[in-house]
Image (cartoon, rainbow, N blue to C red; front, side, top):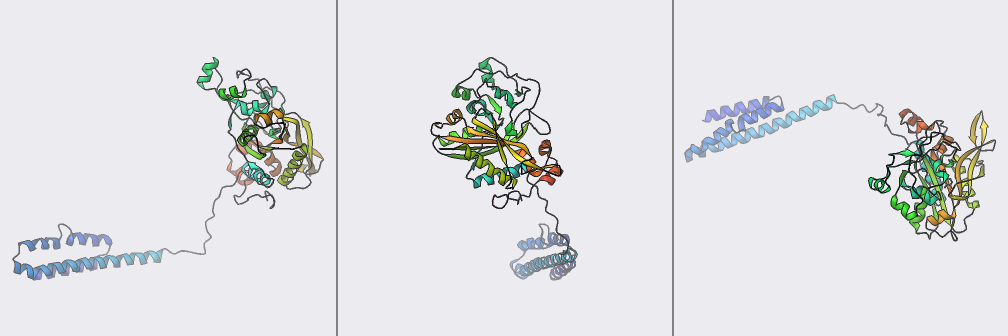
Amino acid sequence: MTTDLDQLRADLLGSIDAAAGLEAIEALRVHALGKQGAITGLLKTLGGMSPEERQETGPRIHGLREAVTEALGARKAALERLAMDARLASETLDMTLPADGITTGSVHPVSQVMDELAEIFADLGFAVASGPEIEDDWHNFTALNIPDTHPARAMHDTFYMSPSPRLRGASGEDSPRLSSDRAGRDRPDAGRGEGQSASGDSLADMPLSPALSPEGEREQKKMLLRTHTSPVQIRAMKATGGNAPLRIIAPGRTYRSDSDATHTPMFHQVEGLVIDKGITLGHLKWTLETFLKAFFERDDVVLRLRPSYFPFTEPGAEVDVGYSLVNGKRVIGGSEGWMEVLGSGMVHRSVIAAGGYDPDQWQGFAFGCGIDRLAMLKYGMDDLRAFFDGDIRWLKHYGFSALDVPTLSGGVGA
Ligand code: DAH
């Protein structure tokens, strides 16, 4: 037994010392100490020994187990150290190599211009308001003094939503899914920033319901994609309860069934609204002048207010900015020619009333402006459709850095 144990000890410790890798160590552990292992087998024999024999052999077997366990741990640590040293020697880090570039996205010109507008108008005390893009007929038209039979409705090329089956059943008529009412005639679409008109076949396939009261109209909820941001005027007025001054801009998406180089079915507008006591056309003109000078970053921006008709204003005016020709290109500033940029006016009494204000006490001015067109004018793009194609090269070229935060005092869009 003695020689057996000594031999086993010498064999095991020798093998452990010679083990070349972590797998070999594990195999040796199983061989010596595993369930069927040599030392485990020896420990099992202790039960069958006489007390004297156990007293003499027991400590030697336990001692062997401890020695082997210790040797396994030590060899394992040594091997791990060797592996780490080898890795450190092979994996060197060259601190002189240039760092990988960081790829960042860019801010779309429309978002950039919206930020610029928010900054400019924040400095003038305006808050930013918003409203739903799927709007009801009452907010989009009726409350803005455009009743059902008003010809201006046909000028908006509206996308209507299908009425819910409940309403369809109630009216006894089947209605189109998404239809438009473009009427193929000139229309004042100042909110798109340009006095262009669209022509097309008459798709007057939407059943027009007889004029309803505001409540009835709202209840019926004829839904559409808002054709302008003007319905936010009504929502913002209603939100104050009709007894507090209001100064808001409302930038957002708008929709009309129209498509060419300067018109896309989805486009962006910004609405402006001021409601207070004693508001005059002078306030409107000063505000627009201050805004356009800040936006185009030029003091020589000249405005021209041309009388025009918008059902929700009285009086209404289209606003042109003057441009000069520099090397055959139009540059904002001066007055060699005029470009229409927005529609505006004093808020019509019936719109003030629809917003919940008393028109004998409160007055206001409003304006609506095409954001895409503002971006095109300021940053020199010529095809509106490229704005929404999602071409990464266009975005890289015309996009802005996320860190380029515009402020009025710092010079916007720098
Ligand atoms: N909503 C008009 C459009 O889309 C633009 C407009 C004109 C807005 C005059 C106004 C305004 O607030 O006063 O054509």
